[in-house]
Length: 151
Image 1 (cartoon, rainbow, N blue to C red):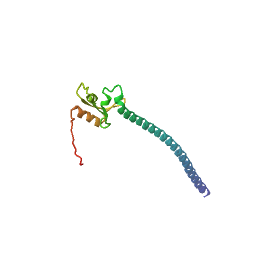
Image 2 (image 1 turned 30 degrees about the vertical axis):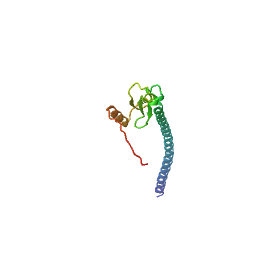
Image 3 (image 1 turned 90 degrees about the horizontal axis):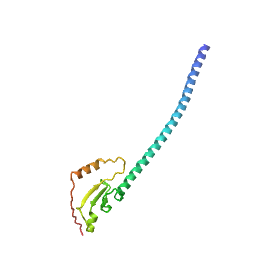
Image 4 (image 1 turned 135 degrees about the vertical axis):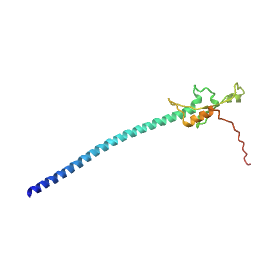
């Protein structure tokens, strides 16, 4: 009978030892994986922040490029004839308008819609493409709206 109690005590000791060891290992592994996860999370957050800064710089470069395009050597119109709109098109150029005002217009007045892109691979947005198509098809007009205001 004593041997049964010894065997039971050994089995209980083994179970308790197994559970204790398992718990310690689990706790140790959990801490290790949590540390790895936090390191990966910090690395990804750094990458995300860096990408956000790069994207922000690109947007700022684009907006500056849109505003200063009439002052660049590649701009083939008189900067005084350009009007910044921003959206849905960047600039409208009234080519010859300054000469018209000065009385020295040598060619017919021309209206030019200009989109400025500063990226290495410029792409038009859906709206810009549709606007370009409308202009190319001649879907443009001039309208005069007269208003009366009460005195």
